[in-house]
Amino acid sequence: MDCGTWERRLYDGEPYISGEQPDAEVLTKLNSNENPYPPSAAVLAAIAGFDGGQLRLYPRSDGGTLRAALADLHGVPRERVFVGNGSDEVLALAFRACFGGEGGILFPDITYSFYPVWCDFFGIGFETRPLDGAYRINADDYAGEKRGVVIANPNAPTGIGEGEGFIKKIMEASPGCVVIVDEAYADFSEYSAVPLVDRYPNLLVTRTFSKSRSLAGMRIGYAVGSPRTIEALKAAKDSFNSYPIDSVAIAAGVAALGDSGYYSDRIGELKQTRDLSVEKLSRLGFKVLPSQANFIMVSPPAGSAEGLFLHLREKRIFVRYFAGERLKDFLRITIGTPEQMDALISEAEGYVSGGRSAGT
Ligand code: PMP
Image (cartoon, rainbow, N blue to C red; front, side):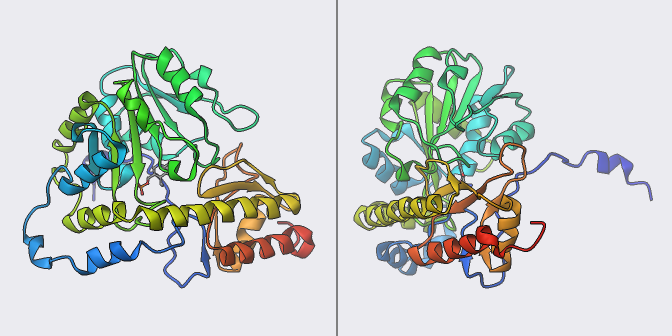
C-alpha cells in the first residue's frame, strides 16, 4: 500500500525528551526536578473541597482569581500577568508570540533542551553561544542582540544562577529584542528579574508552580512582562487554546499563593539539603557545579557518569544523564528529602570507591 503521500505530511520534528516517569514503585525519584514534599494542606483542602458541579462551566480563560493573586504577589497590575498550563506552555506561546517573523533567536549551547524543540516546531531560527569553562553564561554574548534572547536563570541543567548585574547588562544593551528569562528554579535562588519588568518593556519572565510549590501534576505556569508582551501572549493563546488552565488548577494555585509560609519553609529545607549534599559529595571527590536550583550537576571522581547512572538505576534511584559532549561526565540530581539524599550518596560512595562493576 502506498502511504507515501500522507506520511510525508506528518510532523517529524525532533521532540523534547522528558525525565523518565516510571510506573513501578521507585525508591527515590530524583530525575525530573520535582519537589519531594507534598503541596500544602490548604492546597489539598482546596482540591478536595472543589465543587465538581462547577466543572460543567469553562474556566476563566485568563486564569481569573489566580491571575489576580499573582499580580498581588508581584505587586504589578493584572495586565502584566499571563497564566498558562505549565510554564512549558507559557514558554511555547511566548516563543510564538515574541519571535515570529524573520531573525531567529539566541540562547546558550547548554540550557533547557526544550528551546530548540520549540524553535523547530514554530519555524524560528536559532543560534547558540557556548557556556564558558566554568559552565557559566557570558552576558556579553547576548548584549546588543537585535533578534531575540532566551536565558534560563538559574540555568538548567547546570543549576548556576546569575544576579541583577547580569540581566541588566543584557537588557541595557538590547532594547531592540525581546528577552525571555525562564525562572522555573528562581525560588531556590537569590535573585528574580520580575521587578525589572517595570523598567524594560521587552523583558518577559516565566515562572512555574511545578518546582517550588510542589504542583508539577497540576500544570500551572505564568509570565510577568509589559502589557504589550502579555497582550501578544494572549493573542497567541487565543489562536491555539482559549482555556489553557482548568478550574481546579485555578483553585489550587490560589490556595498555594495563600500559604506562602509553608512553601518558604520547604524551600528553606531543600536549600539546606542541597548545600549539605554538595558538601558530602564534594568530600567524596565529586565535582559539583554551584547550584541555585533544586538540583545539582555532579561528576564522579572515578568510574563514569553513565556507569553511576546505571548503578543508581539498578538500586531504584532515578537521576538524569545527558549524553552530550560537554555533559557526558555529569549527572543531574534533583534534591530530595534528607533520607533520599542519604540513600543516593551512600550508593554513589559505594560506586566510586570501587564497588562498581568492571567497565562502567
Ligand atoms: N523551564 C525549565 C528550565 C525547566 O527545567 C522546566 C521543567 N522541565 C520548565 C521550564 C517547565 O516546567 P513546567 O512546564 O512544569 O512549568
